[in-house]
Length: 146
Picture 1 (cartoon, rainbow, N blue to C red):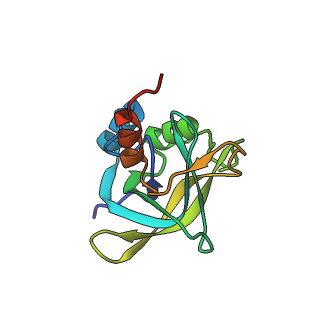
Picture 2: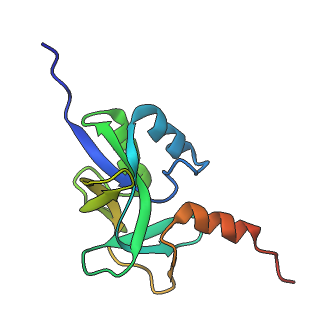
């Protein structure tokens, strides 16, 4: 009998998404299994070259992202935690792992862990669409003012 390894179900919303060119996004696609796209209650913030998000049922906004399954104990988990600045114990300086409920595009909901900002910096700007990939594409398409 084959016993499956436990997995971490992870909701990603920024530079780890499929539309990102970041090397860690490629690493996640290679080492994890995409379960689907979805959204959850929260606020997405533009922090410059990367986003941050806060989550909660009291939040009026939404955060768009993808859900992946990643094997526990895999090197990829440690790499993702390091990349996000949230160590295995979930207590990083800026980010921590929190449980979120994701509404999947295909229907239904899934519980997942996500890297959340502990506190958004005072200068952080909310992203109205909640979609980091769409936001960065629109930002790149804006003409430069001189």
